[in-house]
Image (cartoon, rainbow, N blue to C red; front, side, top):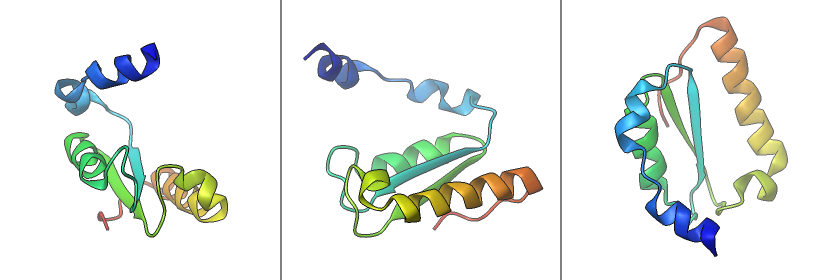
Length: 89
């Protein structure tokens, strides 16, 4: 119960611009707990943020499609390592 309460009041929006690392923000298209609009906002506030929506998936997107999620993350790591940036989709 305290975990849920803590999550409801935890707000670090003002600190997002301080994140220096390349950051991948993923969300399932059908996620009702953390909606895509919120994830898109987070990615837009992080200087090197990148937003990716996983179509047709919900809150547990990484568990619903582990192969697709893994490809997405590995692609991000490869591009970060190569110094590339992909536009948000």
